[in-house]
Amino acid sequence: MIPAAVLTRPGRRVSVAALGRVFLRSMFLQAAWNPRGMQNLGFADAITPALAELYPDPVERAKAVARHLEFFNCHPYLAAAILGGAVRLEERVANGEAPPQIVSSFKSALGPPFAALGDGFFWLALRPVAALAAAATQPFLGMGCVLVFLVLYNAVHLPVRLWLFATGYLRAEGVVDAVARAHMSSGTPFLKACGAALAGAVAARGVLHAGLPGRPFEAVMVASMIVLAWATVPRLGATRAVYIALGVGLVVGARFL
Amino acid sequence: MSKTPVGVALVRVDNRLVHGQVLEAWLPALDANAILVADDEAAGNVLARSAMTLAIPPGVKFEVVRLQAAAEMLRPGGRGPQGARTLVLLRDVRDAVALHDSGVPIPQLNLGNVHFAAGRKQVSQSVFLDAGELSALDRLAQSGTKVEVRAVPTEAPLQLPQLKARFATA
Image (cartoon, rainbow over all chains, first blue to last red; front, side):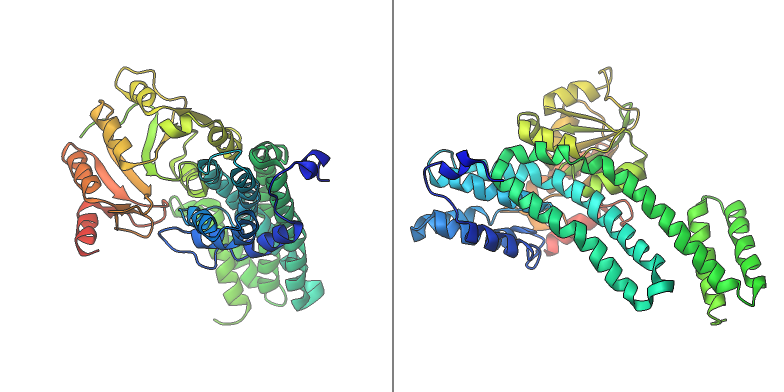
């Protein structure tokens, strides 16, 4: 998987063990999130094992770590690609092949757009889809549906995170092309559409479950509420009307009223 | 009050330019169909440009130009931005002032994210300003620009007097 040219290249290199430690530390990227530097402390901490190998001289190492205390913010998963790339670029800097500024400009160029990709794909598409798919299995699995969520989500999340880190390290600037070919931004609308369909299914099941068994009157009431609210309240929109009716339906169905 | 340049939905100052808040919250809220990044640094950086292009959703027009080019484009009589409803992104308050001073009408200026730097004080969760920036914003406000701090559209906006009060006590 690693091109021979990379392995045989002379100069200072980060060991596989240190790369592993950088990756594990990247899981805690947001642990010291703060308004001034955002993920800066997390980033500096994560890259420290690599810097320790690249800069044996304590003064040089301190300078390198200080560089990574600059502002940084990204999506915590997509940041793995930037972290991998930063390790690669730090190797070049340590070997005198590039000036230290390339690391900063790489981080600040990729941070925000990769954050947007991650927000769209993970937070707004994969997470709701995995949660809704798990919710749909609740009638069959009971509380086991929580495990369904964790397995579904992490079956995508962890491999993608590892792939991003490895690709970042191996390709540095080329990681942008690699991510472009992964078609994350074009896959996101499809995943969101799946989420919307699942949400509809789960909502419909909720309304039926809450209103129908033994008390068909409530189901009729909830259905007419959706139509009435949508038709009469200006700018409410069908989606909000459904949610409000769903809420009322669940309350009525659970016999809180 | 000055009129919005044709095709501009909003002018926003955001150190991070293209990121999640802009694409996932502002584009739908403004019903915008284009983004114009007016920034010298981004315009001159191939990597930054290609990374930004990667994140833009399909169907949204996207352009990165130097600040000077943006001023010529948005000035009355200029060719105007690509989209009918364009979100204009600037990196810093001084870029907004430069646009304004070169004749671009900015009826509403949104401050989204301005990071901490030496001399800057925190005026909101995501905005830090220094005294010079605050007085420049004051000057813009006096010439008719409505200045607000708002990271995402659903937040309650902070107006200039509130910013000054927070700056004074920060």
